[in-house]
Image: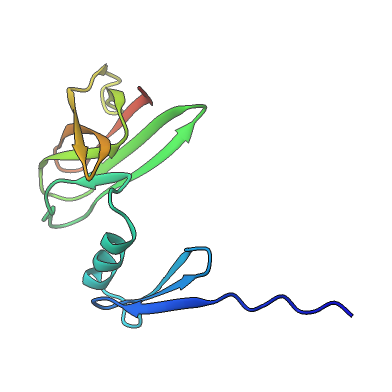
Length: 146
């Protein structure tokens, strides 16, 4: 009769608003007993050194939201940013990795090179881009990793 596989060992610890369970392979699971924006931010900061997309400032808008989505399509990175608020946004955004990006404006059909710089954050290469979104507008940043 075969013997049962041993139960994996794990450890856990508590952070500010979250609990972390670590399995024998090093995988982590985060539990937020009382979910809040503060607890979620603390858990994400613990889990990742560098985010895929990172705002350089905390955005404060009214009457809507600023959001984004990142998709990979046949080796091309497509970042879509939308400002549904009544507040103009002018900030910098960092993308993990080195990218050469174009700005695609869905309102005018214009495509132009996005001005960007390469930076290093926590030992990771990142691409820094200025993001300007008037109220109730959107834009795409499209490119391939360098």
